[in-house]
Each structure stands twice: as C-alpha cells, then as structure tokens.
Amino acid sequence: MDTSNFIQCLFNQHQQATTAFPDKELAEEFIDGFFEFLFIPQKQKRMSQYELTKEFESYKSHLSALIYDVNADGEQTQSVTDLFFENIPAIYDLLLKDAEAILQSDPAAKTIEEVLMAYPGFYATAVYRFSHQLVLLGVKILPRIFSEYAHSKTGIDIHPGAEIGSSFFIDHGTGIVIGETTHIGNNVKIYQGVTLGALSVSKIQVKPKRHPSIEDNVIIYSGATILGGDTVIGHDSVIGGNVWLTNSVLPYSIVYHKSEVSIRDNNPLPEALNFVI
Image 1 (spheres, one colour):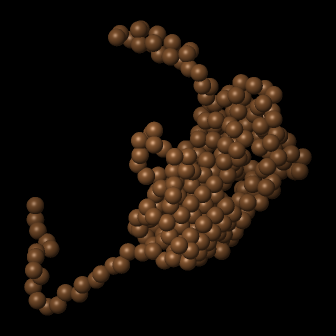
Image 2 (cartoon, rainbow, N blue to C red):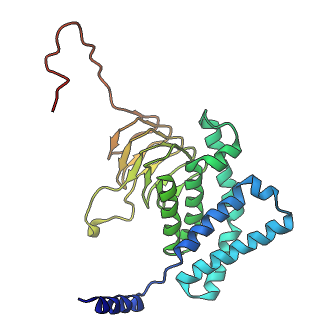
Image 3 (cartoon, helix red, strand yellow):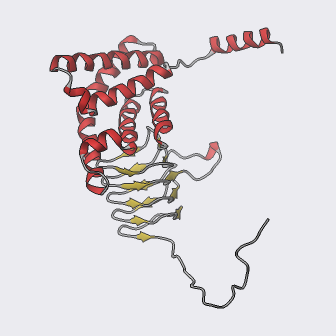
C-alpha cells in the first residue's frame, strides 16, 4: 500500500469511528488546573471571592466542553456537568480527610500544605475521586483519560471504577495498581508496589467482580499482590511486604513471609559467592 492509499484508509477509519473522544490535552489541562484551584493555597490567596466564583464557573464550562465531545448531547452534557459540580463540596471534604490521614500517618509530612502540594499519592487520589464521580454519572472515556494522566505523573494506577472509602492513605505510591472492581474501605493504608488485581482468565469468563475487597483499617505494605474478585481482606488486618494472596483473610490477621537469616562462622563457605565472568 502506497502512502496516498494509506492516508485514504486512515481517513475512512476516522470518519467511520462510532465513538467520540475528548481532546486529551484539554482534559489534562482541566484536571491540573482544577486540582490547583481547589488545593494550592498560594493561588487562592491571590484571588477575590468574585474571582474565585468566576474561575469556578470557567472550570464548569471547560468540563462541559469535554463531556460534550463524548456525549454530543447538549442537554445531557449540562445535566451531567451540573451534577458533577454539585458533588464537588462533598468530594472536597473527602479529599481533606485523605490529606489529614497522610499527615497523621507519615512522620515525614510536616504540614497539610505539604501534603496538598507535594504528595503524589494525594494527587492520584484526588484525580481518582473526580474521575469516579464522572463514572457514577455515566461519562465514558474521559474518566480514563484523567486517571491515565495521573498514572503517567505519579506511577499510581487507580481505575476510576474502583470504590474507595474515606481517609485513604497512599505512601510513596510508585507502582501501585488498583483494578476496576476493587472495593476499599475506610482508613486503609497502601504502600508502594502494591497490586490489587484480577486473576488471569479469558475474556468470556470475566466476572463483574474481578478484583479484591479490602475492608476497613487494613495496612498493605510494599510489594504485596492481592488478586481475585472473591478475595476479601478482613478489617484491621496487616499484609506484609511482598506477600502474594489469592485467598481471603480473616479480620485482625497478620500475613507475612518468614525470613531466615544464617550467620556464617569462620569455616570456608561451601560454595563460592564471588566469581568472574
């Protein structure tokens, strides 16, 4: 196929596409701007109440345009946009609880402002909560664009369809994966490298609930992998680092790998530990 034929085929495919897509750059611009509008104090201090109201309305128009790109229905778009922003005060309060959980749990966090401005786990959680609200309102594609943008910035991959309770604490965060049908309760702490995923099955066998449920007050340390829609981690449990779980755990459990340490004496080692290739 020569170049002109390839361009023609590409053009035909674009014209036949049945799904509309919002502008990715404008979506990323919205999520960063809206996050700063809500949580960066320096920006808020420079604005009067009138200016804050005006900017808030500008974000409503921005989001409405992104939703319209997907829905192509002006009346539905306006309704969804209005409902999203009506829920922002509740989401904001929920995020402040998340920030407070980080401040209380992480000895390195000195002020709430530090958490809001510098913690990737808080940013990823904020984008998740915005995206999840859009999922609840039936918006397609756009929530995934938001969540994947946060993923690219933080290394934290939270599917917007997951359900996460209040006072959620992510520490460090790099490499965390939280699947679409994960249920997470209140006061849960998750460290870097944790995967809450699905067991590998064919597409035909996929169940509606593919990912685990984590009950209240659970701590999951770095590198742990918990898989399967039937897997439930009981409340007030502690899951140690690098644990692999595909079965449920009762409440108040402690799950960990037992390490063994051998101390060598003055005798020669049975096998050489150093060699040259």
